[in-house]
Amino acid sequence: MGFYREESIEEVRDRIDIVDLVSAYVTLKKTGKNYVGLCPFHSEKTPSFTVNREKGIYHCFGCQAGGDAFSFLMEHEHLDFPEALEELARRAGVQLEEDESGPFRGKPKDHSKELAINLEAARYFYKVMGSETGSAAVAYLLGRNVEAQTRRAFKLGYAPDSWDALLKHFESQDVVPTDVEKAGLAIRHEEKGTYYSRFRGRLMFPIENVRGEIIGFGGRVIGTGEPKYLNSPESALFQKKDQLYGLSLGLAEIRRTSRVLLMEGYMDVIMSHQHGFTSAVASLGTALTAEQARLISRYAREVVIVYDNDSAGIKAAKKAVQAFGDRDVLVRVADLRDAKDPDEFINSHGRDAFEEVISAALPAYEYLIRMGKKQHDMRNIEEKVSLISELLPFLADMNNRVKQAEYVRMTARELDVSADSIVFELKKHEENRRVKLKREEDTDRKHRLQKQQSKTSAAETVIPGERQLAGICLREPSIYREIQSEIEGLVCRDPLVRQVFDRMRALTASEKPFTFHDVVAGLQDEEIRKQVIPLCLAEHSPADPGTARDWIVSLRRAELRHRIDELMEKIEFLEKEGKMDELLEIGKRLRTLQSELNRI
Image (cartoon, rainbow, N blue to C red; front, side, top):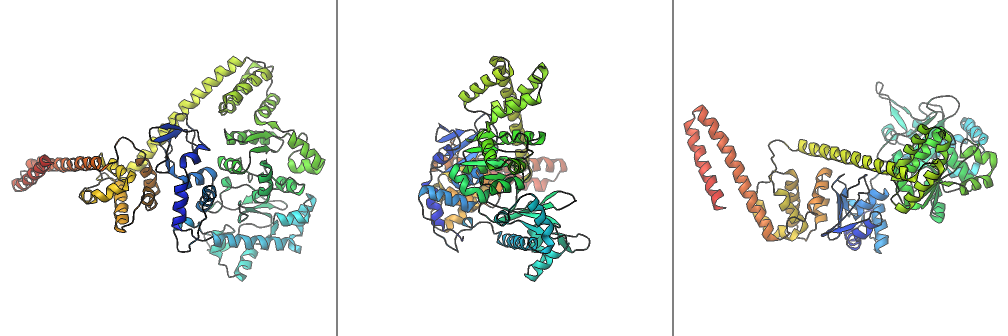
C-alpha cells in the first residue's frame, strides 16, 4: 500500500463523529461543550477522559493520552495508522485515494526489508526440515501426530544446528549480516565482530501478525538444551505482548463464530487447528496481556480459555480472566479433566470429546469459584476468608450491577456465608482500590510534571497566560491570522507555546486555511503534542479576538514586570559594588520600562 491523499484523510476525519466513536467503548456524559467518562487506557474511578465533538479530539487528564479519531482507534484497537484510517473510512463510507507523493501519515512504517528476510528464513527452515538435516524435527512432529498438511499450513521448519548455515544462505541471496541481525535472526559477536545464527538445532514456528506477515519466530530445541523455547528478540516489528499465535490462520473462523479458543502453547494451537478447531490462538507462552485481550475483543464476543490443567495453568487462567476486565466479551474456562493440555487431550480423547469440553466450559467466575473450592479447605474459616479475598477483584471488575449482585449471591451460597458480609468486604475492597488508584494517579501526575519541568531550563520561566492565548488560537485558528502581528511582538518563554506559534506562522505563510489538526501534525515532539491537545478543550477563556488581545496585554505587562524585576536585582548589586556609571544607565532603562508599563 502506498500513501493516501491528504484530502481522503481529512474527509474521513470530517465525517467521523468522535463522540459516537468513543461512545462505543466509553460511557460519556455531556459537560458543557465536552463529554467526559472513565479513561479506557488506564484504571480510574474519577472520570478524567474528555472528548470534544467540535474539534474531534480527546484527552485524558490522568494518563495524558490524547489525539483524534485515528489515534483513539489505533490505541484502543491496537492498529497502525493505515489500518485505523481504512477502518474509519469504511465506517464513514469514504473511498480512499492513494498518492505515492502524499503525506507520510498514510504510509505504514517500512519494515519491508525485515519482513522479506523473515519470509525467506521461513522458506529456508521449511526446506531444511524436508532434507536429511531436518529428519529429527520431522520425527518429533510425527511423534506428536502433526500431519504434513498441518506442517505446511503453519510453515513449520527446522533451523540446522550450525553457527552460520543461515547466514551463508542469506549471503547467497545478497543479504548482508547486519540486515539479518536487524530481523532478529543473527547475533553479533561483540569481541570478534562476526555474526552467528540465533536459532540452531530448533524446530521453528513462524509467528505471523493478523495480516499473515511473518514478524518473528519461536524455536523449540530438538533433544536436550536450554532454553527449551527461544523467541525472536523484541523490536519495533515484533512485540510479544501485541501478538497471538495462529490468529492469521484462524481469523476467518473467528469472524464467522465470533469465538476464540485461547491456549498457551504452539502445539496446542497446531493440534486444535488440525482437528478443525481453527479459532484457536495462543499468547506466545506468556501470561495474556491487556493488549492481547484487546486484540481478541476486536474480533470475538466470546473467549473460551483452554489452558494447561496444572497449578500454573489455573493461575494463568485467572490472570487471563483479569486481563479481559470489563470488556464486552463473554469469558468461559474449559476443564481438561485428566489431560495436561489441549494437545494431549485431543490426542487421547479425540475431536468429539474436545468439542464437549469446549461446550461445557464454565463462565469465568463460576470456574474461579470451583477451582477456589478445590484449592482451599472450606471447613477452615481462614481458608474461606482467603478465597473470598481472591474473588473480590473479579467481583469488583463487574460494571454490570445486576450481574455483580447475582454473583455475590452465588458466592454466598457456594461458600456458605452471608451475602451482606460479601457486599461489605466488596465495598471495602473497592474503596481501597479507589484510594490506591488515586495515589498512583497523583504519583504519575507528579512524575510527569517533574519530567516536563526538567525539560524547561531555569532561564525559561513560563509566564501565566501564554498557554491560554495559544489555546484560543488553537480553538479558532482564524484569530491567529487576525492578531498575528501582535503575537509576533511577544516574548514567549514556554517552549510549547513557541512551537505552536512557530507552526502557525509557517502554516499562515502558505496562505491556506488550517485547522488545529494541521498544527498538531507538524509538532515533532510527542510530549508537546500531548500537552497541546488539552489546550483546545479549555473552556475558561472565550475564543474570540477581544479575549486574545486581553491576554496579549496581560502578557506584555507580565514581561515588562519580569524585566523590571531583573533590573531591580541588578541595581541592588551595583549599589553594593558602588558602580555609579552603570547604575545611571540601568536607571534610565528602568524608567523607560516603567513608563511603558504605565502606558499599557
